[in-house]
Image (cartoon, rainbow, N blue to C red; front, side, top):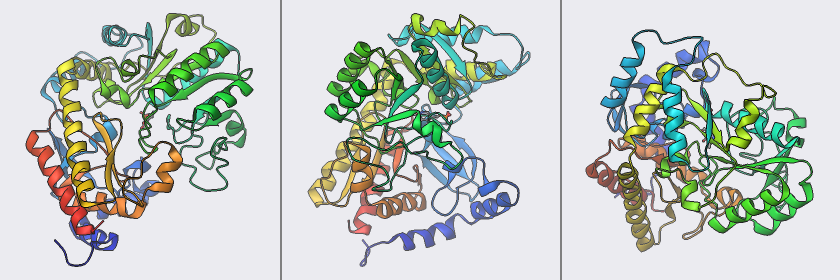
Length: 450
Ligand SMILES: Cc1ncc(COP(=O)(O)O)c(C=O)c1O
Protein backbone atom coordinates (compact mmCIF):
# COMPACT_ATOMS: atom_id res chain seq x y z
CA UNK A 1 0.00 0.00 0.00
CA UNK A 2 1.19 3.56 -0.74
CA UNK A 3 2.09 5.89 2.15
CA UNK A 4 0.26 8.94 0.73
CA UNK A 5 -3.13 8.60 -0.99
CA UNK A 6 -3.09 7.91 -4.70
CA UNK A 7 -4.51 10.97 -6.50
CA UNK A 8 -6.03 11.63 -9.93
CA UNK A 9 -2.80 13.41 -10.95
CA UNK A 10 -0.74 10.32 -10.03
CA UNK A 11 -3.04 8.10 -12.08
CA UNK A 12 -2.99 10.47 -15.05
CA UNK A 13 0.82 10.54 -15.02
CA UNK A 14 0.94 6.73 -15.17
CA UNK A 15 -1.75 6.73 -17.86
CA UNK A 16 0.29 9.18 -20.00
CA UNK A 17 3.31 6.88 -19.78
CA UNK A 18 1.30 3.71 -20.55
CA UNK A 19 -0.96 4.96 -23.33
CA UNK A 20 1.40 7.09 -25.44
CA UNK A 21 0.55 5.39 -28.75
CA UNK A 22 -3.15 6.07 -28.14
CA UNK A 23 -2.35 9.71 -27.38
CA UNK A 24 -0.41 10.00 -30.67
CA UNK A 25 -3.36 8.53 -32.60
CA UNK A 26 -5.79 10.89 -30.86
CA UNK A 27 -3.58 13.84 -31.85
CA UNK A 28 -3.41 12.58 -35.45
CA UNK A 29 -7.17 12.00 -35.42
CA UNK A 30 -7.85 15.54 -34.25
CA UNK A 31 -6.39 16.88 -37.49
CA UNK A 32 -9.15 15.23 -39.51
CA UNK A 33 -11.94 14.33 -37.04
CA UNK A 34 -13.41 16.79 -34.51
CA UNK A 35 -12.19 15.59 -31.11
CA UNK A 36 -10.06 12.88 -32.72
CA UNK A 37 -12.73 10.15 -33.06
CA UNK A 38 -16.37 10.03 -34.14
CA UNK A 39 -17.83 8.86 -30.87
CA UNK A 40 -17.49 11.30 -27.99
CA UNK A 41 -18.14 8.52 -25.48
CA UNK A 42 -14.77 7.01 -26.44
CA UNK A 43 -13.13 9.65 -24.22
CA UNK A 44 -11.33 8.07 -21.30
CA UNK A 45 -9.75 10.74 -19.15
CA UNK A 46 -7.37 12.71 -21.36
CA UNK A 47 -8.10 10.74 -24.57
CA UNK A 48 -9.48 7.46 -25.86
CA UNK A 49 -7.55 4.23 -25.61
CA UNK A 50 -7.32 2.96 -29.21
CA UNK A 51 -8.12 -0.71 -29.70
CA UNK A 52 -5.92 -2.95 -31.82
CA UNK A 53 -8.10 -6.04 -31.44
CA UNK A 54 -10.14 -8.20 -29.11
CA UNK A 55 -10.18 -11.86 -28.15
CA UNK A 56 -12.49 -13.43 -25.60
CA UNK A 57 -12.73 -11.29 -22.49
CA UNK A 58 -9.80 -9.04 -23.46
CA UNK A 59 -9.20 -5.98 -25.64
CA UNK A 60 -5.68 -5.28 -26.87
CA UNK A 61 -4.63 -1.69 -27.32
CA UNK A 62 -2.35 0.02 -29.82
CA UNK A 63 -0.07 0.65 -26.84
CA UNK A 64 0.54 -3.09 -26.57
CA UNK A 65 -1.57 -3.71 -23.45
CA UNK A 66 -4.08 -6.48 -22.96
CA UNK A 67 -6.96 -5.23 -20.81
CA UNK A 68 -9.83 -7.23 -19.31
CA UNK A 69 -12.71 -5.60 -21.18
CA UNK A 70 -15.22 -4.29 -18.65
CA UNK A 71 -16.55 -1.79 -21.18
CA UNK A 72 -17.54 -4.37 -23.80
CA UNK A 73 -18.47 -1.62 -26.21
CA UNK A 74 -20.78 -0.07 -23.66
CA UNK A 75 -22.50 -3.41 -22.88
CA UNK A 76 -22.74 -4.74 -26.47
CA UNK A 77 -20.24 -7.61 -26.24
CA UNK A 78 -22.14 -9.92 -23.96
CA UNK A 79 -20.30 -12.97 -25.36
CA UNK A 80 -16.92 -11.20 -25.34
CA UNK A 81 -14.84 -10.62 -28.48
CA UNK A 82 -14.56 -12.81 -31.57
CA UNK A 83 -17.02 -15.44 -30.37
CA UNK A 84 -16.66 -18.45 -32.67
CA UNK A 85 -20.40 -18.90 -33.24
CA UNK A 86 -20.97 -15.23 -34.04
CA UNK A 87 -17.95 -15.19 -36.34
CA UNK A 88 -19.19 -18.24 -38.24
CA UNK A 89 -22.67 -16.73 -38.66
CA UNK A 90 -21.17 -13.43 -39.77
CA UNK A 91 -18.87 -15.09 -42.30
CA UNK A 92 -21.78 -17.06 -43.70
CA UNK A 93 -23.78 -13.84 -44.05
CA UNK A 94 -20.91 -12.24 -45.97
CA UNK A 95 -21.22 -14.92 -48.65
CA UNK A 96 -23.60 -14.40 -51.50
CA UNK A 97 -24.18 -10.66 -51.20
CA UNK A 98 -24.61 -8.43 -48.16
CA UNK A 99 -26.79 -5.53 -49.22
CA UNK A 100 -30.10 -5.77 -51.01
CA UNK A 101 -33.19 -3.77 -51.80
CA UNK A 102 -35.01 -6.88 -50.57
CA UNK A 103 -35.71 -8.24 -47.10
CA UNK A 104 -33.89 -11.39 -46.00
CA UNK A 105 -35.12 -14.38 -43.99
CA UNK A 106 -32.81 -13.51 -41.08
CA UNK A 107 -35.02 -10.52 -40.33
CA UNK A 108 -38.05 -12.75 -39.80
CA UNK A 109 -35.92 -15.21 -37.78
CA UNK A 110 -34.67 -12.56 -35.36
CA UNK A 111 -38.13 -10.98 -35.06
CA UNK A 112 -39.53 -14.43 -34.25
CA UNK A 113 -36.92 -14.94 -31.53
CA UNK A 114 -37.71 -11.58 -29.88
CA UNK A 115 -41.46 -12.17 -30.08
CA UNK A 116 -41.02 -15.64 -28.53
CA UNK A 117 -38.91 -14.34 -25.67
CA UNK A 118 -40.53 -11.05 -24.72
CA UNK A 119 -44.13 -11.41 -23.67
CA UNK A 120 -45.17 -7.81 -24.44
CA UNK A 121 -43.91 -7.98 -28.05
CA UNK A 122 -46.06 -9.22 -30.93
CA UNK A 123 -44.27 -7.36 -33.71
CA UNK A 124 -40.80 -5.89 -34.26
CA UNK A 125 -39.28 -3.29 -36.59
CA UNK A 126 -35.51 -3.08 -37.07
CA UNK A 127 -33.22 -0.10 -37.61
CA UNK A 128 -29.46 0.44 -37.31
CA UNK A 129 -29.33 1.78 -33.75
CA UNK A 130 -31.30 2.17 -30.58
CA UNK A 131 -31.22 5.95 -31.13
CA UNK A 132 -33.21 5.47 -34.32
CA UNK A 133 -35.54 2.93 -32.76
CA UNK A 134 -36.16 5.23 -29.77
CA UNK A 135 -37.12 7.97 -32.20
CA UNK A 136 -39.36 5.51 -34.06
CA UNK A 137 -41.03 4.47 -30.81
CA UNK A 138 -41.87 8.10 -30.07
CA UNK A 139 -43.24 8.58 -33.59
CA UNK A 140 -45.40 5.47 -33.26
CA UNK A 141 -46.70 6.68 -29.89
CA UNK A 142 -47.55 10.09 -31.29
CA UNK A 143 -49.32 8.58 -34.29
CA UNK A 144 -51.20 6.05 -32.16
CA UNK A 145 -52.42 8.52 -29.53
CA UNK A 146 -52.76 11.63 -31.70
CA UNK A 147 -50.84 13.55 -28.99
CA UNK A 148 -47.47 15.29 -29.36
CA UNK A 149 -45.73 15.72 -26.01
CA UNK A 150 -43.68 12.97 -24.42
CA UNK A 151 -42.49 12.30 -20.87
CA UNK A 152 -39.10 10.96 -19.85
CA UNK A 153 -37.08 10.71 -16.66
CA UNK A 154 -34.25 13.00 -15.66
CA UNK A 155 -31.03 11.03 -16.17
CA UNK A 156 -32.60 8.74 -18.77
CA UNK A 157 -30.71 8.30 -22.03
CA UNK A 158 -32.53 7.19 -25.16
CA UNK A 159 -29.98 8.03 -27.84
CA UNK A 160 -28.74 11.28 -29.28
CA UNK A 161 -31.77 12.29 -31.38
CA UNK A 162 -33.40 15.71 -31.08
CA UNK A 163 -36.71 14.54 -29.57
CA UNK A 164 -35.02 12.56 -26.81
CA UNK A 165 -31.68 14.08 -25.85
CA UNK A 166 -33.26 16.10 -23.10
CA UNK A 167 -32.35 16.26 -19.38
CA UNK A 168 -29.95 13.35 -19.52
CA UNK A 169 -27.15 15.10 -17.63
CA UNK A 170 -28.56 18.41 -16.38
CA UNK A 171 -26.12 18.81 -13.48
CA UNK A 172 -26.60 22.53 -12.86
CA UNK A 173 -28.63 23.56 -9.90
CA UNK A 174 -30.85 25.56 -9.70
CA UNK A 175 -31.24 25.56 -13.53
CA UNK A 176 -32.40 21.95 -13.42
CA UNK A 177 -35.50 22.97 -11.45
CA UNK A 178 -37.11 21.59 -8.29
CA UNK A 179 -36.66 17.95 -7.26
CA UNK A 180 -40.29 17.00 -7.85
CA UNK A 181 -40.72 18.99 -11.07
CA UNK A 182 -37.43 18.95 -13.02
CA UNK A 183 -36.85 21.43 -15.82
CA UNK A 184 -36.68 20.14 -19.40
CA UNK A 185 -33.20 20.97 -20.66
CA UNK A 186 -31.60 20.13 -24.04
CA UNK A 187 -28.40 18.13 -23.46
CA UNK A 188 -26.66 19.59 -26.43
CA UNK A 189 -26.28 22.89 -28.19
CA UNK A 190 -28.22 22.50 -31.42
CA UNK A 191 -31.18 20.68 -29.87
CA UNK A 192 -33.97 23.27 -30.27
CA UNK A 193 -35.56 24.64 -27.11
CA UNK A 194 -38.91 23.88 -28.72
CA UNK A 195 -38.00 20.18 -28.45
CA UNK A 196 -37.42 20.57 -24.73
CA UNK A 197 -40.83 22.21 -24.45
CA UNK A 198 -42.29 19.04 -25.95
CA UNK A 199 -40.81 16.92 -23.15
CA UNK A 200 -42.19 16.60 -19.63
CA UNK A 201 -39.34 15.57 -17.32
CA UNK A 202 -40.04 13.30 -14.34
CA UNK A 203 -38.04 12.17 -11.30
CA UNK A 204 -37.20 8.47 -10.88
CA UNK A 205 -38.98 6.73 -8.00
CA UNK A 206 -40.91 9.92 -7.15
CA UNK A 207 -44.39 8.39 -6.78
CA UNK A 208 -46.46 11.44 -5.90
CA UNK A 209 -44.65 13.93 -8.16
CA UNK A 210 -44.78 11.62 -11.19
CA UNK A 211 -48.46 10.78 -10.80
CA UNK A 212 -49.36 14.44 -10.27
CA UNK A 213 -47.46 15.55 -13.40
CA UNK A 214 -48.87 12.74 -15.57
CA UNK A 215 -52.43 13.55 -14.52
CA UNK A 216 -51.91 17.27 -15.07
CA UNK A 217 -50.55 16.76 -18.61
CA UNK A 218 -52.47 13.63 -19.66
CA UNK A 219 -54.29 15.39 -22.50
CA UNK A 220 -50.99 16.27 -24.23
CA UNK A 221 -48.87 13.18 -23.53
CA UNK A 222 -48.30 10.47 -26.15
CA UNK A 223 -45.94 8.34 -24.06
CA UNK A 224 -43.68 7.91 -21.08
CA UNK A 225 -40.29 6.44 -22.01
CA UNK A 226 -38.02 4.98 -19.34
CA UNK A 227 -35.11 2.71 -18.54
CA UNK A 228 -35.82 0.22 -15.74
CA UNK A 229 -32.20 0.87 -14.80
CA UNK A 230 -30.69 4.04 -16.24
CA UNK A 231 -27.59 2.83 -18.03
CA UNK A 232 -25.62 6.03 -18.47
CA UNK A 233 -27.31 8.30 -15.97
CA UNK A 234 -26.09 6.70 -12.78
CA UNK A 235 -27.62 3.20 -12.82
CA UNK A 236 -30.72 4.29 -10.97
CA UNK A 237 -33.01 1.27 -10.63
CA UNK A 238 -36.73 1.96 -10.79
CA UNK A 239 -38.61 0.30 -7.95
CA UNK A 240 -41.11 -2.39 -8.93
CA UNK A 241 -44.05 -0.66 -7.24
CA UNK A 242 -43.12 2.59 -9.01
CA UNK A 243 -43.20 0.88 -12.41
CA UNK A 244 -46.50 -0.82 -11.50
CA UNK A 245 -47.92 2.59 -10.60
CA UNK A 246 -46.72 3.98 -13.95
CA UNK A 247 -48.36 1.11 -15.82
CA UNK A 248 -51.73 1.60 -14.20
CA UNK A 249 -51.71 5.42 -14.43
CA UNK A 250 -50.59 5.51 -18.09
CA UNK A 251 -53.18 2.88 -19.02
CA UNK A 252 -55.92 4.87 -17.31
CA UNK A 253 -54.82 8.13 -18.99
CA UNK A 254 -54.32 6.82 -22.54
CA UNK A 255 -50.54 7.36 -22.50
CA UNK A 256 -48.28 4.68 -24.01
CA UNK A 257 -45.57 3.21 -21.80
CA UNK A 258 -42.23 2.59 -23.52
CA UNK A 259 -39.41 0.61 -21.92
CA UNK A 260 -35.99 1.32 -23.35
CA UNK A 261 -34.34 -2.10 -22.88
CA UNK A 262 -31.32 -1.26 -25.01
CA UNK A 263 -29.03 -2.19 -22.13
CA UNK A 264 -31.34 -4.00 -19.71
CA UNK A 265 -32.12 -6.76 -22.22
CA UNK A 266 -28.92 -8.37 -20.90
CA UNK A 267 -30.66 -8.81 -17.52
CA UNK A 268 -32.55 -11.96 -18.44
CA UNK A 269 -33.91 -14.32 -21.08
CA UNK A 270 -37.25 -12.48 -21.20
CA UNK A 271 -35.79 -8.99 -20.80
CA UNK A 272 -35.65 -7.03 -17.55
CA UNK A 273 -39.37 -6.30 -17.88
CA UNK A 274 -40.16 -9.92 -16.97
CA UNK A 275 -38.63 -9.45 -13.52
CA UNK A 276 -41.02 -6.50 -12.95
CA UNK A 277 -44.06 -8.40 -14.19
CA UNK A 278 -45.09 -5.27 -16.10
CA UNK A 279 -45.82 -5.20 -19.83
CA UNK A 280 -45.03 -1.97 -21.69
CA UNK A 281 -46.78 -0.98 -24.93
CA UNK A 282 -43.45 -0.64 -26.75
CA UNK A 283 -39.90 -1.83 -26.09
CA UNK A 284 -36.77 -0.27 -27.59
CA UNK A 285 -33.82 -2.61 -28.11
CA UNK A 286 -30.23 -2.37 -29.34
CA UNK A 287 -26.70 -3.33 -28.25
CA UNK A 288 -26.73 -7.15 -27.74
CA UNK A 289 -29.37 -7.82 -30.41
CA UNK A 290 -26.84 -6.88 -33.14
CA UNK A 291 -24.03 -9.10 -31.86
CA UNK A 292 -21.48 -6.29 -32.32
CA UNK A 293 -22.99 -4.89 -35.51
CA UNK A 294 -25.29 -1.86 -35.81
CA UNK A 295 -28.85 -2.96 -35.12
CA UNK A 296 -31.74 -1.39 -33.22
CA UNK A 297 -35.34 -2.48 -32.88
CA UNK A 298 -38.68 -1.41 -31.55
CA UNK A 299 -41.27 -3.99 -30.63
CA UNK A 300 -44.69 -3.94 -29.07
CA UNK A 301 -48.28 -5.05 -29.12
CA UNK A 302 -49.76 -5.73 -32.54
CA UNK A 303 -52.38 -3.04 -31.96
CA UNK A 304 -49.76 -0.33 -31.48
CA UNK A 305 -47.13 -1.61 -33.92
CA UNK A 306 -49.71 -1.86 -36.68
CA UNK A 307 -49.63 1.92 -37.15
CA UNK A 308 -46.48 1.12 -39.16
CA UNK A 309 -48.55 -1.22 -41.34
CA UNK A 310 -51.11 1.39 -42.26
CA UNK A 311 -48.64 3.46 -44.27
CA UNK A 312 -49.60 6.54 -42.26
CA UNK A 313 -46.35 6.37 -40.27
CA UNK A 314 -43.26 6.56 -42.39
CA UNK A 315 -40.02 4.97 -41.13
CA UNK A 316 -37.27 3.93 -43.50
CA UNK A 317 -33.51 3.57 -43.58
CA UNK A 318 -31.20 2.22 -46.30
CA UNK A 319 -29.49 -0.18 -43.92
CA UNK A 320 -32.43 -1.07 -41.67
CA UNK A 321 -32.47 -4.79 -41.03
CA UNK A 322 -28.98 -5.27 -42.45
CA UNK A 323 -28.21 -8.89 -43.27
CA UNK A 324 -24.84 -9.14 -41.49
CA UNK A 325 -26.10 -7.43 -38.34
CA UNK A 326 -29.13 -9.71 -38.24
CA UNK A 327 -26.92 -12.80 -38.61
CA UNK A 328 -24.56 -11.72 -35.82
CA UNK A 329 -27.49 -10.70 -33.62
CA UNK A 330 -29.32 -13.96 -34.13
CA UNK A 331 -26.21 -16.01 -33.28
CA UNK A 332 -25.67 -13.92 -30.15
CA UNK A 333 -29.25 -14.12 -28.97
CA UNK A 334 -29.34 -17.88 -29.56
CA UNK A 335 -26.19 -18.26 -27.43
CA UNK A 336 -27.93 -16.35 -24.65
CA UNK A 337 -29.80 -19.26 -23.14
CA UNK A 338 -31.42 -19.06 -19.69
CA UNK A 339 -28.29 -20.63 -18.15
CA UNK A 340 -26.09 -18.07 -19.90
CA UNK A 341 -28.09 -15.30 -18.21
CA UNK A 342 -27.76 -17.16 -14.89
CA UNK A 343 -23.99 -17.18 -15.28
CA UNK A 344 -23.87 -13.44 -16.12
CA UNK A 345 -26.04 -12.57 -13.14
CA UNK A 346 -24.06 -14.84 -10.81
CA UNK A 347 -20.80 -13.11 -11.80
CA UNK A 348 -22.45 -9.72 -11.20
CA UNK A 349 -23.72 -10.84 -7.80
CA UNK A 350 -20.25 -12.03 -6.84
CA UNK A 351 -18.57 -8.71 -7.81
CA UNK A 352 -21.21 -6.70 -6.02
CA UNK A 353 -21.28 -8.65 -2.77
CA UNK A 354 -17.51 -9.22 -2.49
CA UNK A 355 -16.65 -5.57 -3.09
CA UNK A 356 -19.49 -4.07 -1.04
CA UNK A 357 -18.96 -6.34 1.96
CA UNK A 358 -15.25 -5.57 1.91
CA UNK A 359 -15.87 -1.80 1.49
CA UNK A 360 -18.33 -1.79 4.41
CA UNK A 361 -15.82 -3.64 6.59
CA UNK A 362 -13.26 -0.93 5.82
CA UNK A 363 -15.70 1.98 6.38
CA UNK A 364 -14.90 2.92 2.78
CA UNK A 365 -16.75 5.42 0.60
CA UNK A 366 -16.38 3.02 -2.34
CA UNK A 367 -19.48 1.12 -3.50
CA UNK A 368 -20.71 -1.06 -6.34
CA UNK A 369 -24.32 -0.37 -7.23
CA UNK A 370 -27.05 -1.22 -9.73
CA UNK A 371 -29.86 -3.75 -9.95
CA UNK A 372 -27.44 -6.68 -9.79
CA UNK A 373 -27.44 -7.70 -13.43
CA UNK A 374 -24.30 -7.85 -15.56
CA UNK A 375 -24.11 -4.08 -16.07
CA UNK A 376 -23.01 -2.45 -12.82
CA UNK A 377 -21.23 0.65 -11.60
CA UNK A 378 -18.65 1.43 -8.99
CA UNK A 379 -18.34 4.84 -7.45
CA UNK A 380 -16.81 6.74 -4.61
CA UNK A 381 -19.56 8.34 -2.55
CA UNK A 382 -19.07 11.58 -0.65
CA UNK A 383 -19.84 9.62 2.52
CA UNK A 384 -19.95 5.87 3.22
CA UNK A 385 -23.35 4.27 2.79
CA UNK A 386 -25.02 6.88 0.56
CA UNK A 387 -27.50 5.27 -1.85
CA UNK A 388 -28.60 6.34 -5.33
CA UNK A 389 -32.38 6.37 -5.86
CA UNK A 390 -32.71 9.26 -8.30
CA UNK A 391 -30.48 10.90 -10.88
CA UNK A 392 -29.97 13.81 -8.49
CA UNK A 393 -28.60 11.44 -5.86
CA UNK A 394 -26.06 10.43 -8.48
CA UNK A 395 -24.72 13.90 -9.02
CA UNK A 396 -25.06 14.93 -5.37
CA UNK A 397 -23.63 11.81 -3.72
CA UNK A 398 -20.89 10.77 -6.09
CA UNK A 399 -17.33 12.05 -5.79
CA UNK A 400 -16.72 12.29 -9.54
CA UNK A 401 -12.94 12.95 -9.37
CA UNK A 402 -12.30 10.00 -7.06
CA UNK A 403 -14.48 7.77 -9.23
CA UNK A 404 -12.54 8.85 -12.29
CA UNK A 405 -9.29 8.06 -10.48
CA UNK A 406 -10.57 4.48 -9.98
CA UNK A 407 -11.30 4.20 -13.72
CA UNK A 408 -7.95 5.57 -14.86
CA UNK A 409 -6.15 3.43 -12.33
CA UNK A 410 -8.03 0.30 -13.44
CA UNK A 411 -6.79 0.97 -16.98
CA UNK A 412 -3.28 1.45 -15.63
CA UNK A 413 -3.54 -1.96 -13.92
CA UNK A 414 -4.99 -3.98 -16.81
CA UNK A 415 -8.76 -3.39 -16.92
CA UNK A 416 -10.99 -1.30 -19.18
CA UNK A 417 -14.25 0.00 -17.64
CA UNK A 418 -16.40 2.93 -18.85
CA UNK A 419 -14.73 6.15 -17.67
CA UNK A 420 -17.74 7.27 -15.59
CA UNK A 421 -17.55 4.04 -13.54
CA UNK A 422 -20.01 1.61 -15.05
CA UNK A 423 -18.87 -1.76 -16.32
CA UNK A 424 -20.35 -4.85 -17.88
CA UNK A 425 -19.43 -8.49 -17.81
CA UNK A 426 -19.17 -10.97 -20.66
CA UNK A 427 -19.60 -14.71 -20.87
CA UNK A 428 -15.98 -14.93 -22.02
CA UNK A 429 -14.86 -13.98 -18.50
CA UNK A 430 -13.62 -16.70 -16.18
CA UNK A 431 -13.84 -16.91 -12.40
CA UNK A 432 -10.16 -15.94 -12.32
CA UNK A 433 -10.89 -12.79 -14.36
CA UNK A 434 -13.61 -11.81 -11.90
CA UNK A 435 -11.36 -12.56 -8.92
CA UNK A 436 -8.52 -10.46 -10.31
CA UNK A 437 -10.89 -7.54 -10.98
CA UNK A 438 -12.12 -7.71 -7.37
CA UNK A 439 -8.58 -7.94 -5.98
CA UNK A 440 -7.25 -5.07 -8.12
CA UNK A 441 -10.20 -2.85 -7.24
CA UNK A 442 -9.59 -3.45 -3.53
CA UNK A 443 -5.92 -2.56 -3.98
CA UNK A 444 -6.83 0.68 -5.77
CA UNK A 445 -9.35 1.67 -3.08
CA UNK A 446 -6.71 0.92 -0.42
CA UNK A 447 -4.11 3.01 -2.28
CA UNK A 448 -6.56 5.90 -2.62
CA UNK A 449 -7.34 5.64 1.11
CA UNK A 450 -11.01 6.24 0.53
C1 LIG B 1 -30.65 3.00 -22.75
C2 LIG B 1 -30.11 3.42 -24.08
N1 LIG B 1 -30.97 3.74 -25.05
C3 LIG B 1 -30.55 4.10 -26.27
C4 LIG B 1 -29.21 4.19 -26.56
C5 LIG B 1 -28.76 4.59 -27.93
O1 LIG B 1 -28.19 3.51 -28.55
P1 LIG B 1 -27.30 3.68 -29.87
O2 LIG B 1 -26.03 4.27 -29.42
O3 LIG B 1 -27.21 2.30 -30.41
O4 LIG B 1 -28.05 4.57 -30.79
C6 LIG B 1 -28.28 3.87 -25.58
C7 LIG B 1 -26.84 3.95 -25.86
O5 LIG B 1 -26.01 3.84 -25.04
C8 LIG B 1 -28.73 3.48 -24.30
O6 LIG B 1 -27.88 3.18 -23.31
